Length: 286
Ligand SMILES: *[C@@H]1O[C@H](CO)[C@@H](O)[C@H](O)[C@H]1NC(C)=O
Ligand SMILES: *[C@@H]1O[C@H](CO)[C@@H](O)[C@H](O)[C@H]1NC(C)=O
Ligand SMILES: *[C@@H]1O[C@H](CO)[C@@H](O)[C@H](O)[C@H]1NC(C)=O
Ligand SMILES: *[C@@H]1O[C@H](CO)[C@@H](O)[C@H](O)[C@H]1NC(C)=O
Ligand SMILES: *[C@@H]1O[C@H](CO)[C@@H](O)[C@H](O)[C@H]1NC(C)=O
Image (cartoon, rainbow, N blue to C red):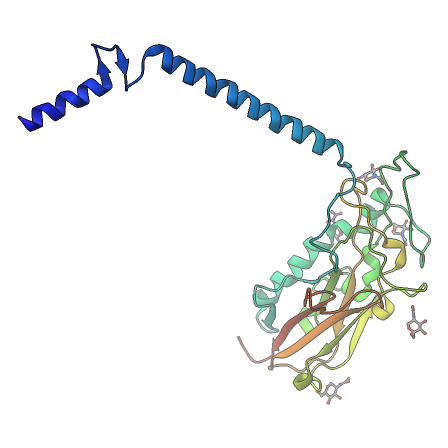
């Protein structure tokens, strides 16, 4: 009995023939509700579109309005060490270092002199290359300076296809992440890279040589105006060649940028302006 009553109550709730109500409401009541929601959502969509439109009007296509992420530049090395930042190989095992040489080939291909000559300009070295907009007149597209692969000399992979890896004198290439508008260096002094061993390894690092000389990033590659404004921009590079590094042992190395206006390892970003990695070259098999 009780069960039957419940069932018919349910049925009545879904469709009540006496009051002609569907789910407790009459057709006109439902119609009004649906109409209300349609108008409400059209209003919301309109409001959203209007806000978007106003926001987009304030954006400059060629310059990010907000740049919070990279106010201090990080440094990265190539060949890309794995997540642990280790470059480990055995001279005798070609396969263990060939991948590094191949990675550098790939990385440096856009720096081929022929490619650079086609894409970029020969700039006046040792001074910033400003290409400011004059008021509302945009100075786009902006030109970029050539960074020829041959600048890297022994680390260019041109004369020595294996970048020294095959003889235990490997090259590491360093670049500074792009930061729009950054003017590194000060008083006409170009920023330069120096690498050293962590304290306990200082007698193992051996002699280093930098390309270009002194490991400088020439001032003419700055400021950078962003991907859209400066489409052909080539980041300048510094190569470090380890001429006499101790083999069969881990050597912990840190490279840093020297420029009196880039804070190194500041509290805000402890990786700013420096990069650490482990280098281990084995001469015994494996
Ligand atoms: C760049 O130069 C290297 C060596 O000279 C050559 O093997 C490679 O094909 C060139 N790549 C491009 C994209 O020009
Ligand atoms: C880069 O190489 C090209 C082709 O060899 C050459 O014409 C150009 O002058 C070089 N640029 C610089 C800045 O040395
Ligand atoms: C960028 O490079 C292309 C060739 O790859 C060239 O035609 C173009 O003029 C360059 N643009 C600028 C702004 O230098
Ligand atoms: C390298 O640095 C030394 C000392 O700071 C300086 O005398 C020399 O001219 C620099 N060389 C180049 C090519 O910048
Ligand atoms: C290379 O380093 C070793 C010590 O690790 C040293 O005995 C040797 O003289 C160095 N060779 C050169 C050419 O600097």
